[in-house]
Length: 403
Image (tube, rainbow, N blue to C red; front, side):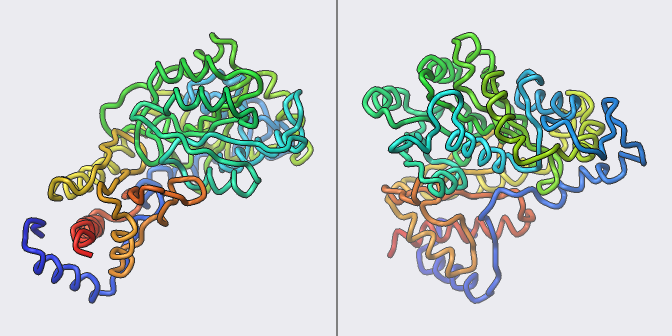
């Protein structure tokens, strides 16, 4: 398809897609079956031996997780294993537990339920499921623009000075969802320095080891916060959902000793242990940082061609219509319509069979005030269908100018 064709030919191509009734899906950042196949050895690695770290993994106990699983999580998050709590398969679930612990229990200060209002800062564009959870819990959200290397620090400092209801911020510091940006050391240092007085920074580091191209290194977040005496303000989350099996991986949270004590005190009322068999499986497959790195390199070889294709297609768009990110890792490309056409593009795509993330999903309350952002998730779809999807998407970007 030639995007420089006259508009009548582009309309003809659009009608062909519409008539085909084919459904193409770029909605969610899910691993492909080819990626998941790389972890099939998790099924056989136990070989009837359930002893790991001198523990019978079939029994109750070790709420905080097996030492070897905590070590693996430490490699992913670049965190001391002693600060790691491994439980369940979903970091989103652990996030929910952490927020509930603060709402009902607190961390030695007042529980959030006893406050008139709790507010969180939300760098945008951001992760829709973060926003959905905060909204469900009744936590007010304030959007903070991302600047390519992290959030707008001046705005954050001004808000913290004037709004005492602000109790935290939640964001993805590496290969951010959806912009793909990596927070700079300057931004991390500054965030650590202003994180005092009960203000919590929740780093959902979902893509900590998920490079598919040469990437800027994420600063040592834990060390920076410890050095600035702000460790109690730092919460880091991660999982192996996009390393091993998305529905059967390991979830983990990194906490300061004080936060760990409070969180375990809360969590222990709801659980007698963790799935140590699954933890043992992962610890045996990823038994060294080298093994983890080699596995991620295999995943990168599957993922990178898809992102290369997305960028190749977008680069064919006429100038002046849009900007988009060029990530070096993660699962998304963030697309911004320069003329506020996101709703038109989305509607055209939907009518022709291309499913996209809901409009406004990358902003709190679904409010994209500039009507510009669309998140593209190319990992799950097969390469040939991705090519079709991006052809259709680019057609819709052009046609949106004509409506």
